[in-house]
Image 1 (spheres, helix red, strand yellow):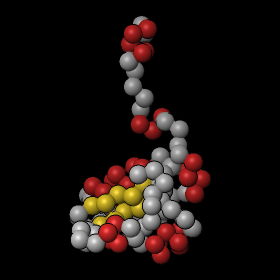
Image 2 (tube, rainbow, N blue to C red):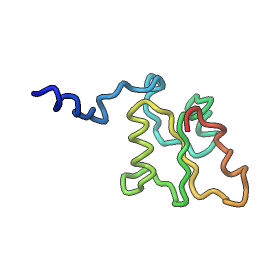
Image 3 (cartoon, one colour):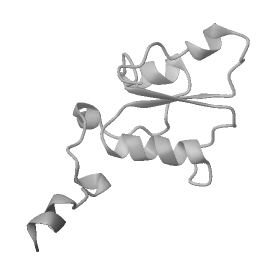
Image 4 (tube, rainbow, N blue to C red):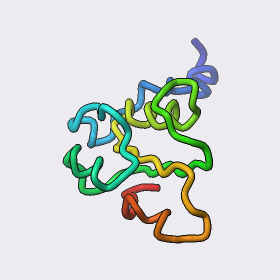
Length: 100
């Protein structure tokens, strides 16, 4: 392999180091309410995904796929599905995310 081709080699998605929250394990469902976060023992989410679609934890739903992919990398992921777009409270129901 030449120096130029190894320089352009891309890192596979799952070859990156996992985020620190990996030690918390996999959530049975990605939380959509503060009560579900409390049941998991989480004080906050690392990433909150907001979607205008309904949320079902199934691979045919895009937000579930993205959420589980982030979770596999060690992030604590929360989902806000179909929030009331006229109320900022709906967007704040899971609190402030640690990352984004």
